[in-house]
Each structure stands twice: as C-alpha cells, then as structure tokens.
Image (cartoon, rainbow, N blue to C red; front, side, top):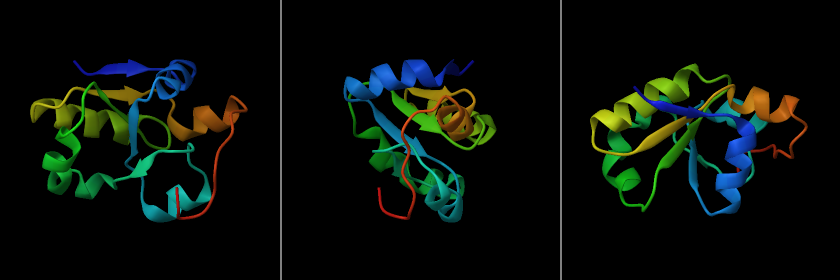
Length: 106
C-alpha cells in the first residue's frame, strides 16, 4: 500500500530538500502549484520513470486532491521508486493558507 502524508508534513520534508512532482495537467498547474514542485503530468509518468528514479530518498507526488497522485505513486512504487502521495493535494495546500505560485514556470 502506498504511503500518504498531509500537507503539513510536506512542508517539513520540502524544507529538508525533498523532491516533489505535480501530476496534474499544465493548465491546472498554472492556476496554482506548490512552489518548487516539478510538473510531470500523470499521462507522462511512465515515460519519465528512469528520470524520476535518479534521486536519493522518496519521491513525493501531489495533484489536485490526492487521487491522481495516489495512482502515480502506486505506479512508481510498482516500478521500484519509493513514492509518497500527498493526501488532499494542492487544494489542501491552498486551503491551509500556505504560499503557492501561479503560471507555467516553477
């Protein structure tokens, strides 16, 4: 079973240098995203497995509400990458009052 964390824990692991990918579509990402996350749309995750594997520690995965990130994390886990989904996703991040960015560039 894939591990999940909440946005409060994500703040902590990001401060420690965790790598985070956002698996939403580019238009959703442009509306609001967690600062410093890398956009890797869900449909492109299989094509990026090798690139995503090249990192020490777990890979954190976020989406809008947590459903797509959970699917992506399960896929990554099945392909040998330690992946952790962010429960509640970007919506929870924004609702928590945490800083976020807009636009296509992270």
